[in-house]
Structure formats: C-alpha cells, structure tokens
Amino acid sequence: MKIGIFTSGGDAAGMNPAIKAFVELAIENSFEPYFIYDGLEGLIDGKIEKADFHMVAGILHRGGTILRSSRSKRFYDKKYRQKAFDNLEKHGIERLIVLGGDGSFRAMDVFYKEFGINFAGIPVTIDNDIYGTDYCLGVDTALNVIRHLLDNIRDTASSFGRAFVVETMGRSCGYLAIVSAIASGAEICIAPELEVDFEGIKKRLKREIENGRTYILAVVGEGSNMTETVRDFLLNELKFDTRVTVLGHVQRGGNPTIFDRLMAYKFVECAIEHIKENIHHMVGFKNSKFYLIDIDSVANNKYKLDDFLIKLAQTKAV
Ligand code: F6P
Image 1 (cartoon, protein in one colour):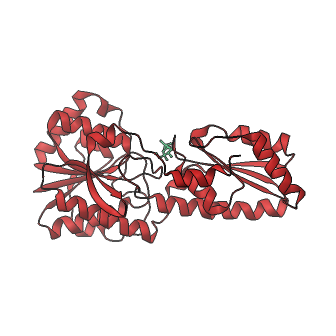
Image 2 (cartoon, rainbow, N blue to C red):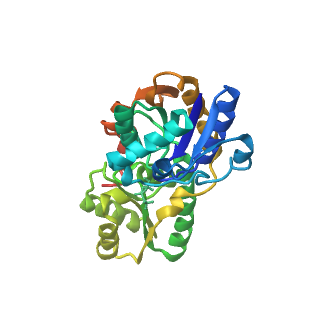
Image 3 (tube, rainbow, N blue to C red):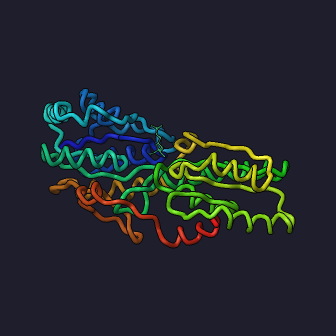
C-alpha cells in the first residue's frame, strides 16, 4: 500500500522528526512511503515523489519541514480538490498522513467526505489549540524558545529597571502566553482566556514596587490584542520606562527538543499502526495515551485550555 505524507499550515519543530519516523516505520511495515511537497498546494500541483531512507538522513535535529508547507486558498475550491484527488489516484496513493493544525484538518474533513480519502492527522502547531489532544507536536520546542527569550529579557529589564511587554503567538489561544508566563515568573499575563483587571494589577504591583520591585515582565498572547494597552498602562499608570518585544516567527523555529523528537515517533507509530483501516481520524494524546479521534469531531469542536493553567495564570491578570 502506498502512503503519502505532507506538512500543512504553520510549521513547527517536530515535523522533520515525524517525517523521518514516517519513512522508517512505513518501510519497516511494508508500506511504500511518498512525499508530497508544499502541503495542500503541492497536492493540487502534483508535487509528489517516492520517498526513501536517504531522503530523511540528517533531518532529525532540524526545525521547519523538509517537505515545506503552505496555507492553501485554492483547496477551498472543489475544482482544485478534484485535481488533488486525481494526483493521488495517478500515483496509486491510498492513504495520507497529514501533519498540521485545525485549518488543515477542516480541509481534510471536507476532502474525506467528498472523495473518501483515508488519512491519519497528526496535530502539529505551536498554538496547542486543537480539539481532542492535550499536546500538539512542536509546542515543547516553542515554549523552550520563548522561555529562553523571556529569561534574556528579564536580564536586561532588571539591569535598567524597565518594564517589558512581550507578545507571544498563539492566535486566539492563550496557551503559549499562559504557560510561558507561569514558567518564567512573569508579573503580568494577558491572554484571551483570562479576565483582566488593570486596577487590581496596579494595586498589586504598586505594593511590590514599594517593597523594592524594580522591573516588570508582562507576557501578552497575540489573540488578546492588548499589547499596546498593556504598554500604555505600564508607562502611564505605573510610570515605568517600557519596551515592547513582539517575539513573532522566532517562536516557530529552532531545533526540536528531546520531548518533541520522541513525541514525533510516538504520534507517527500510532498513525502507521492504524493506517490500513478505514481511517479519517487524528491521532490525539490524552491522559498520557495515544488514541484515534474522528476528524469530524476535531474539525467541529473547540479546544479548551486546562482549568488548572488558567487558574494559575489568572493571578497574573489581576
Ligand atoms: O498557527 C501558528 C501561527 O504561528 C500562529 O501562532 C500565528 O498567529 C500564525 O501562525 C502566523 O501565521 P503566518 O506564518 O502565516 O504569519
């Protein structure tokens, strides 16, 4: 049986280890692995090639994706989905493994319903915002990148007695902001899941300043759209010399951590184990176990951040 793999949407560290695991485990299980380049765009354009061991040598430690990625507008159009299906038929590819986020899975949900293409999705996004899984591949690496940068900013903030507002990615999900604020001991955390009380923050930090606090670190998730508001607050209400750092795409790069390398193998192993079945599922990781969840359910439900994390971070928003 021929199985194709592609990476889609925002890239994340862990994609390359997963591609390597795919080639190794597919061959070990007597499947024929195929690469599809440039995500759904490449599927439409027929950028498909048979894969072999030598093509995944020396990629395990690299961020990004050797298959490249895209966000395909054309795939919304049935005529291009038909082209994508024809390309799969032409190569005799009967199954797909899709590394991507919720946008990619919504697209695959439609593709499966129209053409009956069987596939296994592996959740990969630094946002950690996919329903049905506690963990998305790449999140550990992104958090470690952010942690490193926040530690650096704290150094200079303390030297100058300044306030820093650091904006993290994550779209409408505050996971990156919340976990990194907790893990870096930030004084303020603002995220879509948190209720913000600026008066409360002011009182709390004024007390701390009276007791010797000389600098402030605020972590703001991009989805809250409050980076400038927090900057103005620190400047005008707390009278701090304030700087803003938008971390941006540095969060998407970097060598995958040990955890992401291991998780890549485990996600792919579960996908390969079930790939012969009538599969249109995502491999989820819940309560420390890998399992399959129907793609329809993934595509039509919203991820909810862990209550315990919200509770911890809420103390930094008031
Ligand atoms: O979904 C991953 C992500 O990095 C988000 O956190 C961010 O909002 C978005 O992608 C950025 O998208 P682009 O790479 O298209 O600028």
